[in-house]
Length: 328
Image 1 (spheres, helix red, strand yellow):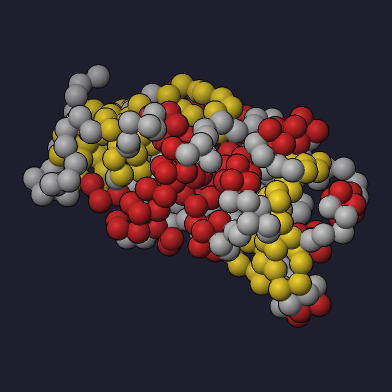
Image 2 (spheres, rainbow, N blue to C red):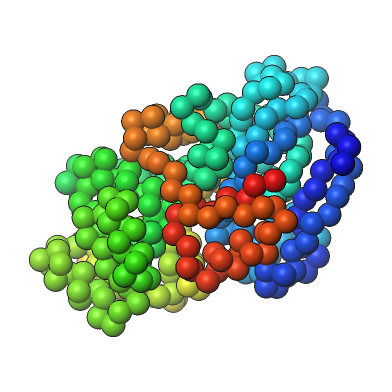
């Protein structure tokens, strides 16, 4: 393959994992505000499966992938703060991270410190930035808060567990198997409950002596959302930020009043990092947390870019723990 070509994953239709395929394309020289990257590690996020399946529709045909780390190979004429050879990462450079090389607008990149490896950056930049806004902006976790984290054994869940514990919270996690509950406890959860078992919400309350959470972080949705409302303390917040088991049931606003004057929000990582200065400041906060050991990369599986179908199938089977990486 020449130095002006790239291999990337695309979809021409929505559907199950096999709709993804690799193609080779000519890579133009970077535009004035762009850099050309050679990816060294590519992150996987569950949103990738939503987009591939059509749950979050995309214009077709479409590339996939939001985050990666790599080495700068060339820079555009107007790029002043990024140089050839820099190690960088991104999580909002436009779809197309599932590729061995690509062009990215420079202001969507953040330089990596020596304390953060390429694989750790690819595993953490999207998930870590998600955790950062959830615990610093959506609800500012305080020492002594009880927090509930659904899917606590997953990529974001483990980061949330470790980081909120480091902030002084009492952390209760849920997961879909006893093995995943063990992973959640290893990630910092004081208590971990298997939400696949009947009566799990009552089991959770028994384990906390009836104490409810100041905030519930719910990325599971359909299987957990109504229980999340019941597990939130009066005037507490339910943060719905994903739908791993399917969309959350619709509710009447009056239910929030009946459950204890609750707050309900559905935030997203991209608006919280919409401008370059905010993105890089939030990334610096994440990198500081990594440096302090609050946040660590838990890489559960690595797949070659050619095995992207297997990577999605593994994620959707919900048999993996931690983060999944694609290696070009």
